[in-house]
Image (cartoon, rainbow, N blue to C red; front, side):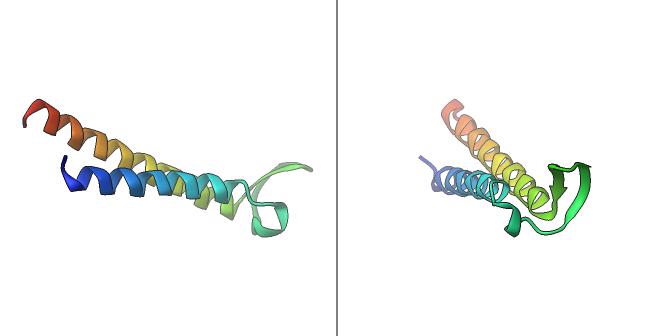
Amino acid sequence: MDWRVSVLAAIGFLGILGGLLVMALPDPYEGGALYTMDASHAISRMDLLGLALVALGGGLAWWAGMLWQRKVKGG
């Protein structure tokens, strides 16, 4: 197996996990609210950071899958 597939998959997994952990932070650590929906729901800076980390990790995991498929098909 190509070492790039393993490295990209591991970094992608860590990115997704880190993003989910950032989005699950308690209120005191979330930072300022960027958009308030009502008294108990808001989008904060840390929510956007978590979303970015999940998207980056997902993209890297997808890229690892594409490399793996290319290797399996013999390309």
